[in-house]
Image 1 (tube, rainbow, N blue to C red):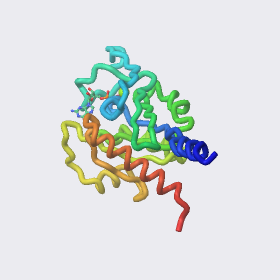
Image 2 (image 1 turned 180 degrees about the vertical axis):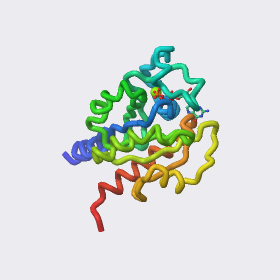
Image 3 (image 1 turned 30 degrees about the horizontal axis):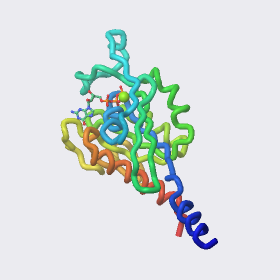
Length: 198
Ligand SMILES: Nc1nc2c(ncn2[C@@H]2O[C@H](COP(=O)(O)OP(=O)(O)OP(=O)(O)O)[C@@H](O)[C@H]2O)c(=O)[nH]1
Ligand SMILES: [Mg+2]
């Protein structure tokens, strides 16, 4: 019957959106939990524990002296980008002693945001290396603490020895729109890489 064919076609068109796993990574205290929290449309899952005196020798708190807690497993959030695309966001732990979890968190991830604290770019070197080695596409999001961006993008690209192919964006991880723009840039990169050359 023609009517039911049309109905079947309509429900096929209304198929479930694609879901994509994205990592929000970077060094200790660069703003990963903040970014997942600012952009997520659901109350984010957090696994934070208080920083204690025991970590004073190993955790570099320069620039984040106010920091009181650290992620010990992961952050989780979700954002609907369009009718047919939903991103699942996984924030990684930043302390070096929890990096063994990054391999598990990276399973099935299509791409990553590497957050960089504009005052301590080197703290995100290891994260850049992690994704380069695994051929997981990423964008760099430079989090301007206190909303300031004293260095042009090209200087940051140079100091992190990044090729032109890696997008470098300035952001404020506390702002939903800014964090969303970073994710859109990552999606654009993923689509560009998936498109056939030529
Ligand atoms: N002023 C300012 N503070 C920020 C910004 N982003 C994050 N913070 C603060 O910096 C501290 C660290 O942010 P987090 O989001 O916990 O950083 P993280 O990368 O998840 O930290 P770890 O999980 O410990 O690696 C928190 O106290 C945040 O409130 C920012 O853009 N500006
Ligand atoms: Mg965190």
